[in-house]
Image 1 (cartoon, each protein chain N blue to C red):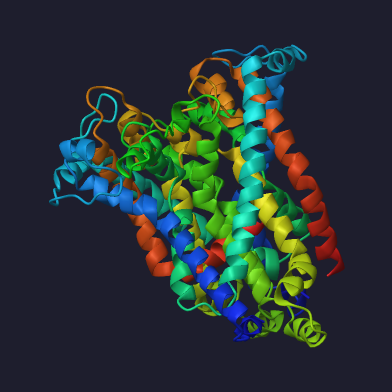
Image 2 (image 1 turned 180 degrees about the vertical axis):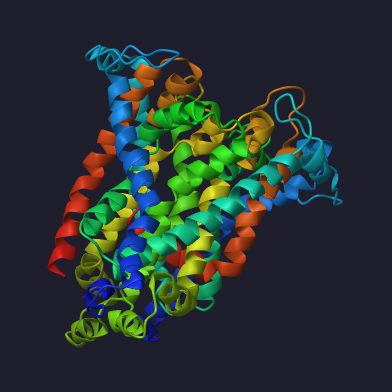
Length: 303
Length: 292
């Protein structure tokens, strides 16, 4: 029962104000949301069906931009990079996050301090993270030099300037920034597991690893789902990290759809193509998010 | 469940050593970049060339810090990070306060004053948290041009408020639905109106949610790069854009020590926020990110 429906009967100025005021106060947000999200998506979609270049044009031109996009090698390189980066980033993010959470859940001395350290990169801007790792990974003075100084003189570690390996440096920096957060999600999940089930399993003589792999970890399914969603979302949107770390290079070795979109839409005067690539990014996110949102909503309706 | 690990067999003891070793190795992995940044920022360029990542500076020099703050070149401008630091502050403070206050009202309305269509609207707002911003930046750039808002800071405040409201509304709505409705209906019978109930009853019990919201918005807005690089220009740019310009400007000798000092300057405000409000930070991350 909401407050508005419980007021005393009869008309008065203040009661009247109370029916109008809530709508009046929320109106700007409704407007901002409808325009800022939904009308703008329609606008971007419209632009993607025009021949807009430096300036927007609104004459219908059919699928020209999509045809150009799908015939564009750089776009496919960017999508391929996203698949490699996204796949590794999500997989190792989940793995490291889960392992750290399980280990931290063993009554560890100084758990609070350790957690704080694991999570602080999440407070940083991806630009700062990119800057730091760019310096650490630079071949002349970075990790390679360190290894040489330690006596491993033959070691070559030039991933950041090597087109075949540069994408992995983005994965390393991304995981450094985000895995602590995944750990925090899993740890919260672990703390919510019902102790009595575990005690019962223990009575039956199940060993600790068995209890984890058979009982506890499977019960964390919802956490896996949210963590996967968040990591996938970060991966698709990734822009600043790559801009600071490699600038999309060497060549297009670390190019991503977000960078493709930014450069065509804003610096190369290819509005239509930029809009088409933005729509493809939306579809990519939707493909990942829809199943999750659907199950979330169903759960909320049931619960 | 952790007491399971307390069987004091030899195997369990070894297992605990391994656990601590792994945890400490990870601590070092997370701390190493911060250590490298700090130590590099205190070195001279010569020492950077002769030493390595983990070598400590032989003497502490603040030259790089001074240069990063007031004289390093970010493109054609050579005024260091100071002006951009202040840009980011001027943009962040109003944007955080406005989006938090409006979000609090929205959450209050969407939980206590539901109207026809309010649940649909909440759903639309929720979906908004999932959208990649790339799909709205082209029209936004057009609209800002049409509105003839020239000032970078004003532009960024507007954009950050609009695209922060979904999160702030979500935080407050999710908190207010847990507040018993009787509290509000009792106040209404006593004759309290819309604003009175909000300010006298709900706001005072919302401090934790307000903290989560302030911290979430502060880190989001301070750390933003996408909106900054697109909607601001020249000397109106936020610090993330300036840092990227500084690091990726390839004129003259690369001054790694200045880069690192500048990066720490750009990171400091959110690190401080994390140090002070870590508890709320984590709560915001888990609550906001599960939906975003």
